[in-house]
Image 1 (tube, rainbow, N blue to C red):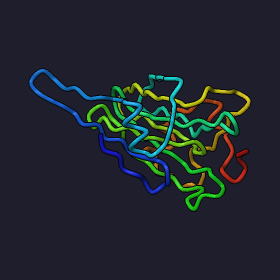
Image 2: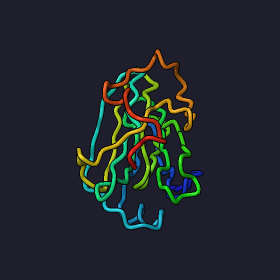
Image 3: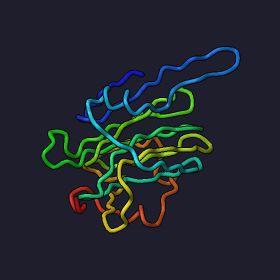
Image 4: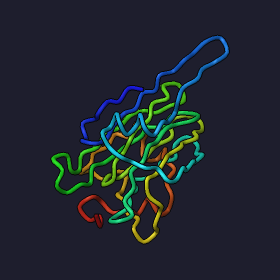
Length: 181
């Protein structure tokens, strides 16, 4: 397993070691001890989630506030997504900056997103199965979000707005400057 820190402190790309032969492939998708050693942390994931979405579905940008903040380890089981993390830590030198990466079934990369970040993804393939581990339980009263096309964030989603499928809840999220962090 190889770990690469992104431009956002504490946000890491995880590249697994893949063993391939004529039968197919094998890789260790998660090992708690190795993971924590490589990112110099002590994360304990307590919940796994999975979503299925069609091309053009944009989920996000979501976060949890306060004691219900969540760190996430995300990956794509099938298909391809553009995955985006936004630093919402007010004292961070990269506050309001984002990192994006294509995660797909072929590169098998994962992205670790620490607490204090917003997260979202856009499905690039016909369909995608997206999986993520969380280190805290979801709490509806602590949820927050930022509109995907906030000009301050200037995220290039690689699709035109009219091609996107966005939930009624996500389409009315506030810009970063009005978000309750």
